[in-house]
Amino acid sequence: MLLKAIILIGGPMKGTRFRPLSLETPKPLFPVAGFPIIHHHVEACAKVKGLKEVILIGFYQPNDSLNRFITQAQLQFKIQIRYLQEYTALGTAGGIYHFRDQILAGTPDYFFIMNADVCGDFPLEDMLEFHRVKPTGTFCTILGTEATRQQSLMYGCIVESKETHEIMHYVEKPETFISTIINCGIYLCSPTIFEPLEVEFKKNLEQNYNSDYLTAPCSEMIRMEQDIFVPLASSGKLYVYQTSKFWSQIKSAGAAIYANRHYLHLYKKSHPERLAKNGPGKPQVIGDVYIHPSAQVDETAVLGPNVTISKNCVLGEGVRVRESVILEGAVLQDHCCILDSIIGWNTQIGNWTRIEGTPNDPNPNKPFAKLEAIPTFTNDGKLNPSITVIGSDVQVPSEVIILNSIVLPNKELSGCYKNQIIL
Ligand code: GDD
Image 1 (tube, rainbow, N blue to C red):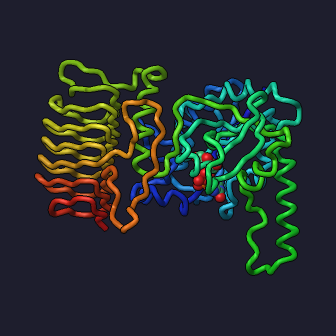
Image 2 (image 1 turned 90 degrees about the vertical axis):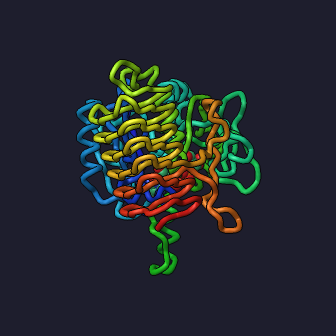
Image 3 (image 1 turned 90 degrees about the horizontal axis):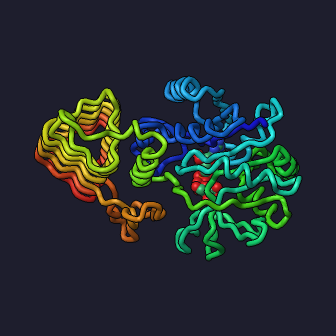
């Protein structure tokens, strides 16, 4: 059996809720648990027997960080990885139709489609087993999971037939409650999915031909959810496979902390060698902690739980880090304390300084509780409490407190800040 996978990586206009972190690196390459977000996707794909190629589709200009990622991941996972660039944002299905010849080359039996901005313990093999025994002519199986009624409104909502798991009704981000089964943004498709895609493409083409060419939208723009899934519901060609394993979107910086925690937790089983251990001459480690081998961490530092220390970071004496991601090249000087925060690339934190955020995690002790999406601002324009994010190349002086704040790159701070965006 030949399988492929497509990862939808979006482009520079996407990921705005992820600023300032996405100013430095394309969001799909932001590191969680020591590796870029889509490294975890590729790793899950590489485990599936028969999966020979991963195609990244997006509208980023090809760039060094993307090329570096592809080269490294190809070497590590020994599968072919390519980037195909859309000439403009073609939507969540337009790029797939546009690059159909490349996707169908070698006549794959099935292919996965994965949104880049999700994380999880992706049950790809289980989806395959489920999809293969569905009636001939089935187009697609969607990975679904259970959310609360309130959360469900922010996702694609699925009503299934309890006996067959056929999708009977699909509504994208409904205004009122439809179902607690939500679309995880992971699909397994048969090549026949190109039939409804072609119909949609031709319909757009006709409509645009008859409308004003200056204002007509791009004919190739197709949304998988509204244009394909909605009309296909109850046609007998669309199914849902439900998972209760860890899954979340990664839209905000707060979600990156959540993803970090859960991927570290998965390492216990999948990569125990990646988790730091206690021992003489080593920092004290509490719970799950990843330390890049090149990082210099003083033995009196205390790290964890749920901490990632990236490449070339330097952590001085008595440093305390909890529930945080410290990005490449950051320097944490003696006795500083970092809680529920992300510290940007090459940022310097002074002695005895305290950086602290508020996690937007409903229940950190319940391992797979879904993350609540809390808006950045309250209705009266105030910043909602959030994790603290310090952008890249920021200088934070000694003996200050930065609480629930977002600091843009290249700042030199001079005092304490609370609930502020520092531009
Ligand atoms: N190549 C490409 N081109 N990728 C795109 C484009 C595009 O024009 N537009 C979005 N994407 C990528 C994004 O980068 C992201 O990885 C994914 O497609 C989905 O992006 P959104 O369009 O922002 O949708 P969403 O995240 O709000 O909702 C989708 O995902 C949810 C699960 O996380 C929907 O599929 C929902 O139904 C689903 O519940």
